[in-house]
Length: 474
Image (cartoon, rainbow, N blue to C red; front, side, top):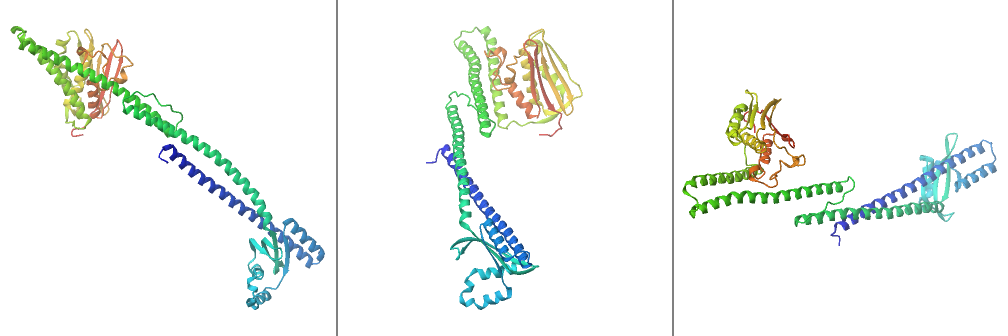
């Protein structure tokens, strides 16, 4: 019955709200009731004190007995009570109480109350049955004091029914307000539960659509609460998944092209030699082409394996200390840039005494990837500058070219796997789009950072940093 999230939210919120509202209303009721009886006790005490003053005035001859009785009656009418001023002797009252215990006097509260009033002060009961009034009364008693001596007690009886009738009216108002608040609260809870469950149902449907591989529109989100933040994060995740899916499709298409082209070439030349279609004097050139295409396939599969290893944490760093100037000189020389692109200038600005502790193979691969990109996209008489400088505990490396540059819209994606600015994926302009992604992963393995600045038609600047480090660091 309560399997849906909406039902669970609604029942849960309503239960908490109703219990809280009922408890609060009941607490207010009891607090108000206690306040009313406290005020009644206070007013009866003031009345009793006035009666005590009039009694003393009568004893001193300041007023007549009739004046005392009229004053007492007037106070009783104001207090809505019946007042008795009883003058008794405490010792005699005690003796009378003890002598008549077996005669049932002990069952009458009046004697015991008189003793308590004269000994301890005040007696107050919210509800006491009066035989004379034949109803339940508010009962209040105070000592009758003359010249500092307790001479008796002042007893007051006030009908409970009138107090209760007033309380009932207040109770009705309190519970009426509580009922109105309850209705409003139930409406708000219903709307809130509907909104919350609707958003979560939309998230569920969208997630199911994504799992099925179907396109999904962004879910509307308003506000700054946790649910709204969850929706925004979900929309961001959906966008990234769509982008990853696009890259996956591009990668499959690109890899298919990258693999098919050399394999087709190799297969064609082999079949041609097998069928005797290739002249003997051209066989060495054909074998050279087959070798180049094979190396291209090996390079591609090697890049993919490198990525897998780094993602799985299986690519360890073998740190060693080496001079940066010597390493860069060897790397630049191994590229045979003058043979590949005659007229392309390559310069290096690097302190000869600068050393770092790093994995030399990984460092070489990072530089080769960056330099290869610079060479591919820079035509003679362009220029490539390798710049190195120390910045505190870091070394900043730069590969700066004057090539075609990269569009600003492409820059945020160039480090993503399988991304290529050349959508045709021609082999002349690059591989499968793994070089920069691999370089980024290797730089981050060394706790460094990598970034690219570029303007179309002016060239590209690729920067990365590595800590100088100490030999033996992981």
